[in-house]
Image 1 (spheres, one colour):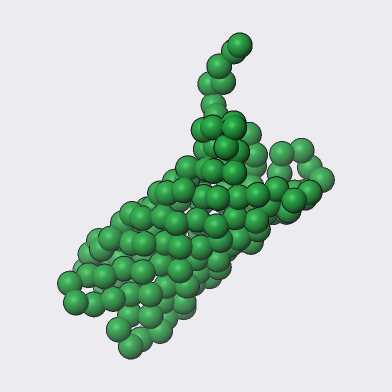
Image 2 (image 1 turned 90 degrees about the horizontal axis):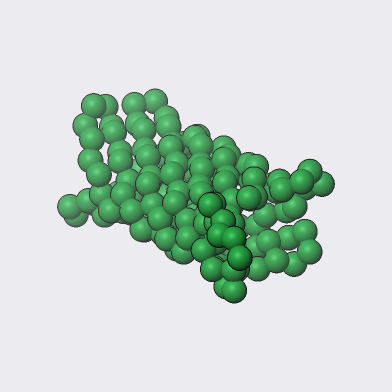
Length: 150
């Protein structure tokens, strides 16, 4: 029996649009989203471990999320719906002032297998909550892009 050097999984890269509510102000952001998912147990192929990073921008503000956690997925023909729960850190820079609160990211999506070998198209939605001192920030993000399965 030969061991695999790289476990089964996928890599995703896409564009995103998010809406962020900070105290009473709502802002819209455009950016990117990417993730690596590893499926370490062939017997439990519905469980993946994910590392996710994203960036969102608007004039004077940039936000970066670095989160990780489990993803649960199922395969139904060409469709692969999934749900995920992550925790990590968010880096926010507003006019030269930077802070890094803890972030909780809950979301899900759907992968559609393309006719090209090992490629899928992903639609994903996430809710990200952060708290810094007494201020809370609630983000909703939608993203779409290409998935390469290995």
